[in-house]
Length: 249
Image 1 (tube, rainbow, N blue to C red):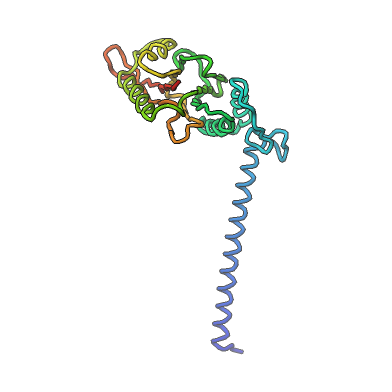
Image 2 (image 1 turned 90 degrees about the vertical axis):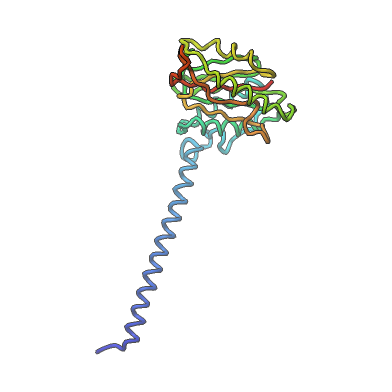
């Protein structure tokens, strides 16, 4: 028995509709699955262990706001971020977490957060300044963190940034002499700076990340930083570079 043409047409349209509905269902399942997977990744990223809040990282559900005590509670923040985020391998990501925690402190101090690979030795890094105003947490083979604080950056004149920027750029244009030990170089550079409480040199090859906290409206933070090249005896670039950081008083 032959069915009318209209019946065949309706049957075909029904199959098309069913096919479209099936595709929509599959797409919805894929989207829901992706969202669920992303949530699980975030949960695993911020909490060590499945639902175990005792092992929450510093940004986990049990995050506690600390009183601003320098240097002990700042060091605690640094150690907690590094030790409780083993899955995090990028230094800049660590800097974001440390910045978030430092901004919870009730203080008008402005911070520089310098993070780089866990290296050691006078060929890799060197610092000079008021030792009461910067701290360092070195974890060889893992990561190093230096935090400098400025008391007066927020109240500094508007041209303070431009002056600091100019001083850093002038030093970077001159370059650094090739040495086997750079320990004394920051102290030597300090003579070229005014209203400066901190000079840092870190080998650029060590994935250096420089971030600031509490520097509202001044994204470069309490001072300025730039790349400086190391020159040989004839003034030619050797390929070695440092990140030069100058911190305001």
